[in-house]
Length: 499
Figure 1: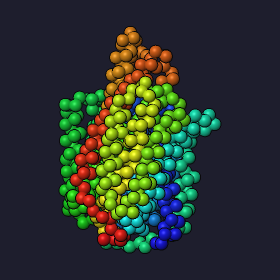
Figure 2: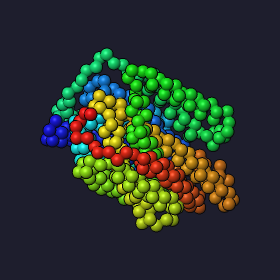
Figure 3: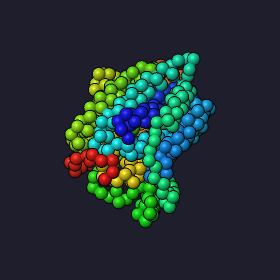
Figure 4: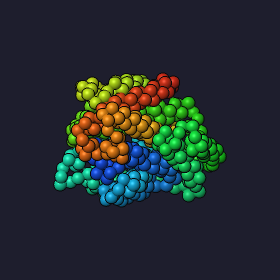
């Protein structure tokens, strides 16, 4: 496809990517209000996010593999259908349990949209040229992440709309993208009727990851770290994932191509993506909660306060994308990005409920710049090493591990946050001579407005200090990404679409 036709098709793909991303960010700032109005708990708050990421993570490699076997355009249209139906269902949810279930279905569509957009772009454009178009991708991601919290805050604060419109708003955009893609996207599809999808491997991967994440969520609260439940869940997860690796090495068409994952650069790119995903999703998901519950700002104000994070992503991804296309080199930008990411989280680790907003903004800017420089370029490293026939599975693999990192990050950091908050609130109320169980803060710590002023102060302090603690963990995770990226081979990106 020439540049004009690429741009026409890209317009629809960018809208799809925009909608998939904004469906997460538009809800992030509204979540404290949503969970509060549905009488949910901190654990349920985490699971509204985790359910989406988990479904997205588990299904990503399957969608990537299907893209190698069947019509990419048809798969994209199916994914759009799943996404639209589930978004409407989320908007009509009457309880947190219903919302978590519908968000899991929405995650299936989101995972498909994100990986299929990358696969289709890889089928149209060579790796070297893709750096320039990755700038557009980065720009759209940044606009979605900047505009999402602002839009979510406005919708939540507007009495004539309400939080349910945070889910409904994505539907018209998705339908518009579907029409554009039907008219502009024309790919030369290669039919491979003799191949089979590895459903057993995909099911084992999904089951192993899900069991591990369930353990992370409940350990330390529902049962002890050293207990028969821990042994059963962790041991079961290791056995299931071990069986998945065994299946993936023996089947003809593996969901996660082990011969690609075993190579040095793809393996290092995957480790770095895992760390970036874990730090980014795990850290950023709780910023809206920090500003609203820890600092007392409205959803709209919380959205505005996250602008430095998103501005960092927008500027750095656009600039880095153009420089990658110009030089053909990708490693320097990845290494610099992951270092800045770690420093940004390190800065955020010092915050509490009274920290200057200037210092918080500087930390968020560092995180944004780091993500913008590294996230898409790590995908490029992997795509540069595989032939066109494996681009779907390879893209699915790195997106899977990045989403897995994000899911683990949200689960682990959410569990740490919930434990720290509960401990700090209990200690604070005990010092006041108030019974924590009778104060109304133990059942649901998110409906702060309904609490007495003294209790509100204790809850805000607990959230402010606990958030700084989880950012320190995020900084440590980002360091793993720094180490992995340093060992990447400094190679030139190829000019051709295929090897």
